[in-house]
Length: 621
Image (cartoon, rainbow, N blue to C red; front, side, top):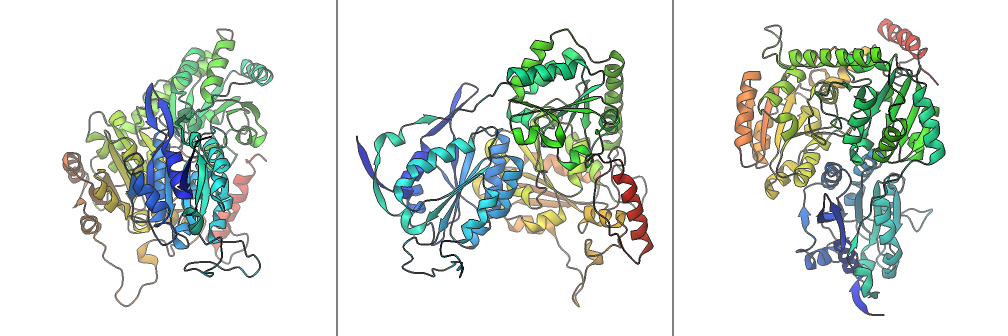
């Protein structure tokens, strides 16, 4: 057997560089490279190995470990999990900065390979700089904090352990059901140790993505359930996009007259203007989708985790029989639904073939869905085409900003990719953004992680450099994490950032008051301050200081003009607009369970508690 002597780090990078994937008949590296911030725990070992393979396996420098992991995760999501990236950090704070990003990837079922440095296996220099010491456990390091947020975790304590760890890592990263973050903790002394690896270990390998069909008995039971339905409704989740099932979804809906609504992760699988597209469902849902969800006798949930925003905390479509098509058995069994464990595309095609023309949704139901769908599109047009607030003393709000952004390009529904994550904007975008092409809507709402937006936009742009990436972000979220704006400039990955400044955490401020609370510690005007008072933050100047172009506009007309300049720019461009923290789109939505104190001296809280208890009576358990 031929061997080659390599350090553990050299073997790791060489193996990753040998992984390939075929997408639409074209061959691509499975890994687009590695984001890296070096420190004493990875610069000598992994850093040298990355340098040697820099032509085959690019290394991308970032400014924050959490941010670069978000970018890597967004890259994978933008590629529908068919391509991915690695991330390497030093030990200590570099590693723990990955925890939030790993949790985000875990919740959203997205692949990312985390390669944090670790302490010396030899223990000769203990305690090394940044080492956490546990008096009760001599084996623990800060990397163990990544265990609960990793789908697969391993610590490489001998160079030859890569022979088993790496194939397992790739298998998990490409598994349609178990996909998520993988952590390989790399002790810094072991990174540099050499071993004679089998040469064949580094042969090029093509990744395979399983397309699991439904088994016969579950398929037959699903067919029976569907045939009994007269008022069916499809809830389209992220699994539809990851399975490339958009056409299969459209065929099923059209053939059988079944209306479709969409989760945050599933938005864009069916174009916004399809006649059976009811739009967003749930807490951030359209009135069309939620009206039919409350009356459906069968909900066909395809590729969705059925989180509380989708189900209205399990109060929205609890009257319906639930049939869950999901590649993950864990998700398929939620809320005691009838499970059809299968790839979304295969399952929809199998269902279409076996149902054939022997069943149709009620014609009245289908026609009603078409009317509601058309009516909602007309409502959206009216909401998003307002050029001025309804009163002279009001600022624009999110919906009017969204309309201006989409009007700035005639093909925005298919050309642009909007990126967002947390706050008020996800609700407004879920309802109002016109998504005409799969992947044109990129929302991180599984973890609703503030600070994801700019970093995520960078990853999306790296995945689709030919398209305009529009990052929409609030001032609060931008202040949490913005350093990858500088990375976007450095890498020549142009973003358009539209920053809506409502001067605080407007979304939570409204939620606080809806629960009977007084405005407190959310808006800047309601926070404790020092003797100088509130800071006057100039976001445009801040973006310019990071290397981007930027401007502050006064109104919607100014925003539309600025968007044209941003589209013509050769580098990242930020447009800042002051927005109203109080106004939101009132159409649509449903109850969401947020617990209200059972005891309070304040009548507003007691009233909110009474409303909460009344709403819970509609909740299925």
